Amino acid sequence: MIELERVSKIFSSGDTPHYALNNVSFRIQKQEFIGIIGKSGSGKSTLLNLMSGIDSPTNGSVKINGTEISSLSHREMTKWRLKNIGIVFQDFHLIPTLTLLENIILPMEFASSFRKKQKQKKAMNLLESVGLSGKGNLFPDYASGGEKQRAAIARALANDPPLILADEPTGNLDSENAQHIFKLFEELVKNGKTIVMVTHDLDLSKQVTRTLRVKDGEVINTLFQDKKEGLGMQ
Ligand SMILES: Nc1ncnc2c1ncn2[C@@H]1O[C@H](COP(=O)(O)OP(=O)(O)OP(=O)(O)O)[C@@H](O)[C@H]1O
Image (cartoon, rainbow, N blue to C red; front, side):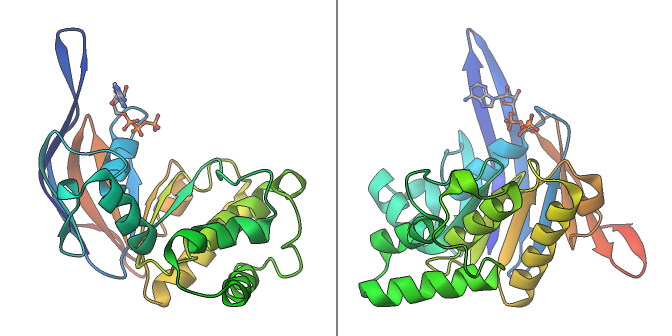
C-alpha cells in the first residue's frame, strides 16, 4: 500500500541544510494500523506530509498503491488524493460555516459522481457509522471535541479512500474520547482500511499493530505489536 525508498527531505535555513528526513525506507501493507511515534521535531509530520503528497521529497521515491506520487502534477495530485487518501488533523479542520453533514458532503462534491440525494444519504450513513446520528445539523462550534473529530473522520471517509492518514488525531481530546477514536480506527482497519497515525499518546501507540519510531529524521526501528505477547522487534 505504501512504499518509501531512500526518502530524504531537506529544509534549508540560511546556508545550512537541515535533514528533516534522512534516507528513510519502509513498506506498509494493506490493512495495517501503524503508529508513528518520536520526539517533537523528529520528522513525524514531515513523513505524513510526504505520504499524503502535501509535500514532496528532496530525494527518493514515495509510492502509494503503486502510484509514484511525486510524479503527479499539483492538479493530478489533488484529484488523486480525493479518491485515495483521507486525512484527519489534530485540530479537525472542519469548515465552521457548514454543518457537520455539509462538511462530510463537501469532498464528495469534488470527486463523486453521486447525485445530490445519494451524497446526502452517504453522509448520513457515515455520520451514523461514527456515532453521530442526529447531529448532522450541528455547526462545528456547537459540537464537542470528540464529536468534531468523529465528523472529521466521517469526512475523511466520504470518497471511500483505502488509506487514512491521521496527524495527532487524539491530541486535542480527553482519554475517553481518544479511546473512542482509536476504537473507530480499529473498526475501519477491520473493514479493510489502512491507517497511519502520528501520535504522542503512549497508551494508544501500544495498541496499534505496528509502530514506526522516528528519531532525528531517521526511522530507527520497527516494532511489531502482538496483542498477546507484547512488543517484539522486527
Ligand atoms: N517548512 C519547514 N521549513 C523548515 N523546517 C521545517 C519545515 N517543516 C519542518 N521543519 C523542520 O523539520 C524537522 C521535523 O519537523 P516535523 O514537523 O516533521 O516534526 P514532528 O516530529 O512532527 O514534530 P512535532 O511532534 O512537534 O509535531 C523540525 O526540525 C522542523 O523544524
